[in-house]
Amino acid sequence: MHHQQTEHSGLATIGDNTVDQYYGTEQTSFVGGNAVNVAVKLRTLGADVAYAGAVGPDADGERIRRTLEEEGVDTSLLVELPGITSVSKIRVEDDGERVIFFEDFATSADYQPSEADLDALGRRRLVHIGMNPFADRIRRELRARGVLVSQDCAVSSGYADLDVAFCSAGDDRPEAERLAREAIAGGARLAVVTCGPAGSIAHDGERWWEAAAQPIEVVDTTGAGDSYIAGFVHRFAQGADVQTCMIEGSRVAALTCQHWGGFDQVPQIVREGAGA
View 1 (cartoon, rainbow, N blue to C red):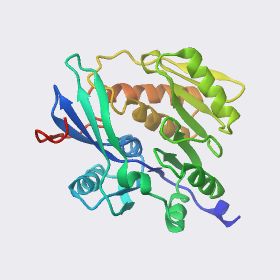
View 2 (spheres, rainbow, N blue to C red):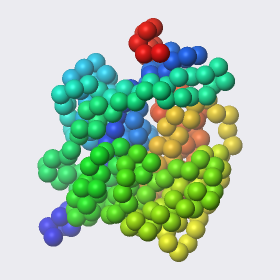
View 3 (cartoon, one colour):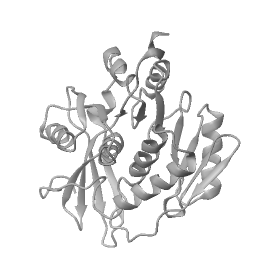
View 4 (tube, rainbow, N blue to C red):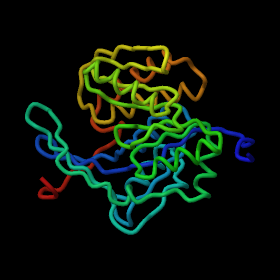
């Protein structure tokens, strides 16, 4: 196939963006979303990275585009669709616990990459898929173009055509092992399961790996899993071994837990009465 002869360079993410609005003991908002968080973290690690997704023709959409551009992420594949930009509303309890009480993926969930978009993504070395209802097709199309593909399987379903399936199991080790086996049985080449403070495990159908989480004082866990993914795939795309990728994932996740939001940014104040 002619796709296989493409020179691959750089990384990309495709999928969800959102504005995370915090209420309760905090009244602030941050740009986020799995695919956006991973893209920005990859850029901070020094990668050439593009983001593909959709926003609405509104102030939140402009904010997401501007933030990505300020962070150095290529936004040539960020499109505007009719509707509104995705918003997630998070209540912060007195003890600091975060509870998502409203989530609307809106235009994010309507995004389907065109053939031209897929060709552009197909020139990347690795593409990570966040939340996207069309993930099955995207994986198949990218694999046909010779691209390494990873996916957050907590937000997008399906394991076929995946080089790395990322899952999440809290600190439930038996559940983590079950998810890893399920991903491999479903067609993934490698399954990586994050277990919060219990670290992470990985499985390729034969071997098992594990890595500890770094001990830190947690400020906010929002985006920690996305940061783990960014650290892992950054090294994975460079050809590093699985253990090295896991250790780097843990390191990047720990850094994210030490600030509010999925990546370090200046928050905006949420207007009173906007949702809580």
